[in-house]
Amino acid sequence: MKLSNNLKNIRKENNLSQEQLAEKLGVSRQAVSKWESGQSYPEMDKVLLICRLFNYNIDELMNENVKEVNETKQSKVNINKYVEDFFNFITKTVNMLSVMKFKQRMKCLTEQIIVSLLLAIIFAIIGAIGASILELMFKGLNIYSIIINICKAIYITLALIVGITILLHIFKIRYLDYYEIVKEDESFNIAKQQKIINNQKDKLLGNVENETDKYLESGIQKGDKNKEKIVIRDPKHSISKFLIGIIKLVLLCIKFIVAFISIYFIVTFVTLVALLILSFIFVGAGLVFLGSLFSIISAIIINFIILKLCYNFIVSKKSKKGKLAILFLVSLVLAGMGIGMISIGIANFNYIENPEENNEIEEVYNMEMKDALPIKHPYDVEYIETDSSEIKIVVKHSKYYSAEIINNRAMSIDEVLEEHAQTGIIIDQILGNSMEIYVSPNNTKKGDMIRQTIKDINNKEIKDYSNYKVYVYTSKENIKTIREN
Image: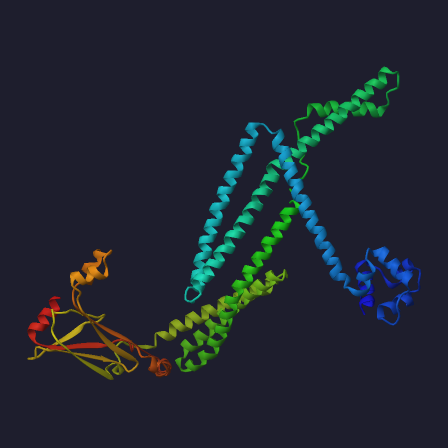
């Protein structure tokens, strides 16, 4: 089957019909048709003729895929062209610098330094913006630092490659092309001058001067007068082949980065679809539910557009800008409707800062008054005077949270110096007793809290279950000391 497929591929690649190939090989069209369908095989002399006509050897024709063979050959040819063009670029540069005056060399060097500094500033600004975007996208992940370091290394490499490519192309446009033009013009003038000398010799020998010689001489005289005028040899400023190779490499790296970033948007897309489904549990929220629904659909559309653009860029496929623009406008309309509905609906919600549930759990702590320790907490404490010198602390909170009291014992100066021999400046921060109250979410009650929150939202209520109350029962003297601290 290799031979039959290869014959068909060779014929199509060379834009030949079965009749045209049959004519080249000296056989009938039916014979070529049977070869391509695998019903029969060509004789050895025809196989050798095919190899000679289309530049293949027998092993490639019989056992390999000619498409892969052609790609390999083309790749080798391209690499050779890139290498050859690179060395030609170096040769032209050396030749140019060797004939330039010192002032011209300094001007060339100064321009390259200025362009390099401008490129460095531009890439630094782009890098700072990119770092900020990556921080917003990945900061919550555990592998954030790894992602940042990888992206930084890739960006620096790409910036260097792109910067060098731009610098070399500007150098080519500003100097190398100009140098070649001057050199060619001078060679042209020398040839014309030689032609004049020959014509003068012919005259001295008695030959008759024809009209063509007169025309050439007059043209040279005019050319001498306009010698300073230079016609650009490369008006379109074509890029050298090896620069094209570098650009292709950069483009491949950019595609890899886009593919890597696309993973984030794929995860976001899946998350948004999950949120769209989960939003139906808030159907009782009315306009807030509808607004959330429209907003999530808008975010899904925008995410889809970004993924579509990334995919088209990676596979080098042209994007249908009209359809994508319409989708983007639709997403903006949905987002506006969603925000409006949420704004109207949220006005009908009741916010309850201290719901009754915040008094469900009461935790009691008995403390001794030592060194008049202060109480650290985010909320005000209600002090209740009693006859007892002991301290009784009562913390009331919801069942979805749990309380913890930490009594920080003061360290002596000797203990501080022993533990922090090199950092004595932190003594003031460590000395002094204190008691800290922490109220944090109860992990065993997270499921109950989520269900209660869903129920509250459907009832158009927002309750803050994180608030708690602290009551301190002790003597008047102790209350005064604690407050002073």
